[in-house]
Length: 241
Ligand code: GLP
Image (cartoon, rainbow, N blue to C red; front, side, top):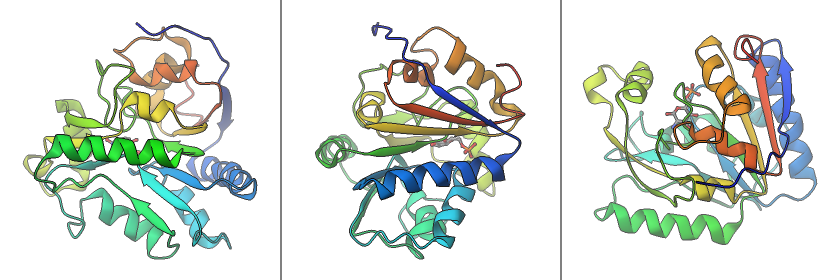
């Protein structure tokens, strides 16, 4: 079990997702202006408005690098449900980076791909990692029970995550059952972490992440041990804290 350091997370409460995304952009821009080279990016509905803010800005990423948290196994970059496609649509088409990386969910040897990706992320040293939060407390695709020192690995998605993510698919049976995700240890190597959580369905996970014990049954609780974490929550997600 990991040691508890009890760093204090900085919690920023906002009224809604739009306000939270504007605040997130402000912090993102500060880090950019300070010379951050590598940005860790996330998918899902949570960072969508942050990406809109970035797209509307004059920030230029042609000399910066991005690494994404995760990708579904079996979906190619041309598949609209893949995270590679999501990133193209929401950010990269409008704001190309010098280099952008996601795990390759089509790799023949998935474990080898996971190791390769882990090395790549560590080599690039993420300056700022953007995170969303799963309803069950997952970060990236690290489901409850994932070891805190895990490296990038192949994940069996839980029923609850498959159900939550089925809203993007025509049918729940089409949601991939596996993904490749940065590990919790990999995520924790980022110099700074910015986690956003919006909506009442995140309230329970937000409460346990901040006030609960640091336990592998609640992956996001490990962030209590990171020295530089900012959490942006809207009123609904902050209901229990
Ligand atoms: C997905 C992603 C996570 C994301 C989470 C929440 O499963 N792998 O990176 O943070 O679920 O998604 P959303 O932002 O749509 O609520």
